[in-house]
Image (cartoon, rainbow over all chains, first blue to last red; front, side, top):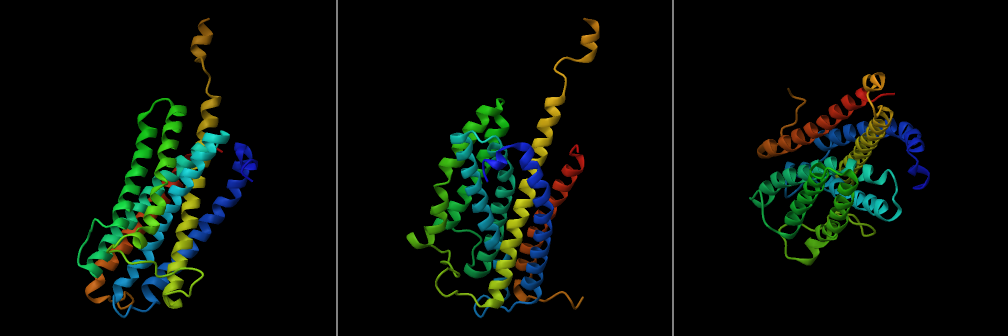
Length: 245
Length: 41
């Protein structure tokens, strides 16, 4: 599959079919998730209506972490196998990944105010998630500051791969350290800690955000391919200069 | 405006979270669609 999609033309054909489908699925799942999250789910016994923030906070952080993992894997594919579209895929994941991570931090901060009485605490999970945002910003800064794009890809790829060590730190920080952030409420294969009326909007929003990320990223890569094609078609010598020769 | 639920003392926090989330999604949607419109076929 990976080798099949290494060819930009084959990737274009694949993406032209899959991208609108992702867009439709994202719209359906996010709309449903918003409806259930706001209008058709119960308030929590302890947290009251503030539990509804979970339906936008948790998916945002999951997608932010997933985007970084995708960036690291794509960078690894570029490094080892010189997969031609891997750098473009990693680069396409950066901005939406950073946006979802920032969204997770903002919504988490507001949820923290209602639950813990504070917008921020330098505990394991929150600090490591903030570091994830800085890693995204650093990755994008490398791409924009290094003129030679091949060199930029190599350096940025290193940032992505080395920074991926932060992902298990975010995940297990609540288990390793005595943190303010709560432990996982929903884990498989143990019995879920959430009732289905709360698990449903959470699952719908998580799926919706996933398909939305896919839609944005595939479109970004398609635009990169189109830009590259336009660049290749541009004449290297201007026609007026040719006429003078 | 009875169809807008009342979340009591958490209304500001809940609506701010959902408002910011929807704004981010809309920003990406609009930017992507505009960029797609400029893409040569």
